[in-house]
Amino acid sequence: MPPGHSVPEADSDLDYMARAIRLAELGRYTTDPNPRVGCLLVREGEVVGEGWHRRAGEPHAERLALAAAGARARGATAYVTLEPCCHQGRTPPCTEALIEAGVARVVCAMVDPNPLVAGKGLDALRAAGIETLLGVSRAEASALNPGFIKRMEQGRPYVRCKLAASLDGRTALASGESKWISSEASRSDVQRLRAGSSAILTGIGTVLADDPGLDVRLSASELPGMTPNDPIRRPLRVVVDSHWRMPPEARMLALPGRTLVVGAESRPEPMAALQAAGAETLRLPARAGRVDLVALLEELARREINEVLLEAGPRLAGAALSDGLVDEIILYQAPCLMGQGARGLFELPAITAMSDRVALEILEVRRIGPDLRIRARPDPGRIG
Image (cartoon, rainbow, N blue to C red; front, top):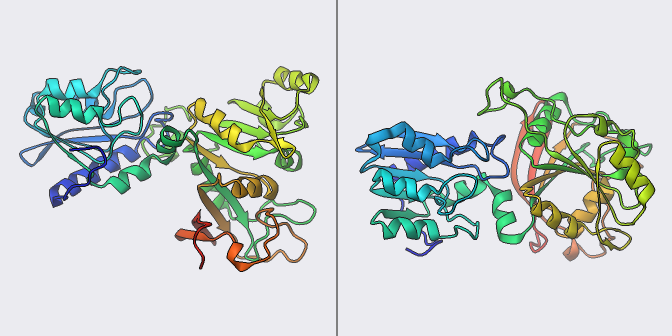
């Protein structure tokens, strides 16, 4: 069966794969930069083993499920949310483990986009006489790992742009004051977004105006799949600072975790001061007088960054949207009005025709405390 080929889905296969997907979701806050993967082993209608990949360098989901099943894995069906790996990485190949355990059938949701795998794992299973079925709950499995998939296929991370605005679309007063537009419940939800991200990206304007920490202010016990003693993974903080205005005394530099400051000029003195304060500095090519955001995202992908949370003012947010780099917008809309003169969501070039407007596909709307949380996907090709 060729990679990517869809197949009819039996009800039992769908039910078991749904369980495997729920297992994979437990790794949302821990597996990065690896993909989130779950595995279920079923023999004669009984679940005999299950596992989910917890952390890079630790056993993969398939090996954990096989260990739980023991001898009962022989003749079983394995349900796995991502094609089993067939190469030696941080851990041994899972295809070998499945073959050695004597499983009879492997049901796989999707092909692994990693070029080192990309269908080769399924080929190895078939060559060993194991029946395979591909495509069961593919969409749900893909939604587990948008950043890993995009990094493997396009060489860039998946970018979510987080915004908080009033009902009239304002993100700050004319003075720059913005604390707090959204509710405490929304701000707690943002903490979970941060905890699940590989990096948090902001601009120098936000740093100078708000001096943010961009840290995760949650305990492990507040995150699914984690135990109270688990360390919280700290996303890389990335500051776009084209002209090196970042103050060495910025609050985030005194917090645990790593900060990368990215500029577009060679200025040894401020770069050295930031390095002395604990930051990493990086010079990238300039485009239109600012850091080339495409080059930045490609560099982050090379650093195995899967998912980026963009928390920035209207200038950087607008630049990323204009460059087609925003995959998803998450807007917390508060039930208030901020009036004329307050700052908007995005700085975009003037639009003179309705046919040129940036259309959005609404993916989800739900209440978070008193606020609305709107999840949307930019869709410039769609004319409403």
